[in-house]
Image (cartoon, rainbow, N blue to C red; front, side, top):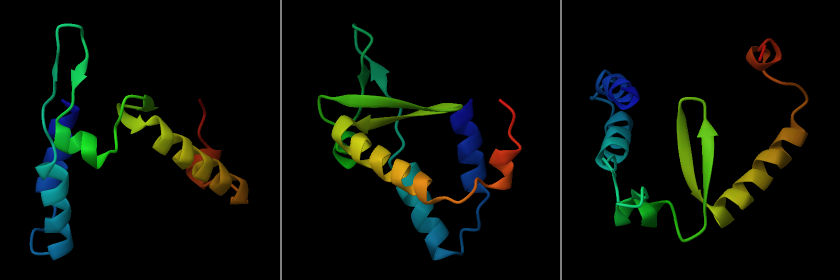
Length: 101
């Protein structure tokens, strides 16, 4: 299970570092299992919906072995920012230059 791998990595982080503890609390503290309703819709807890500014229009963004759920308006803005940053890049990182798809 992918989530168990993430948890295992987070548990191994040094807990004496206050920034690490804060990250663990926020990241793990907001984690929750979600159910589907009878029509196959994902039921996302209100706290997470509010945090992610999710409303009626959503975008599902694939990220290799996971996906991200964005508010359509927030994703549109983020996408514009990412495209603008991409234009400013002189070259790709070596890892991407050598990546064969």
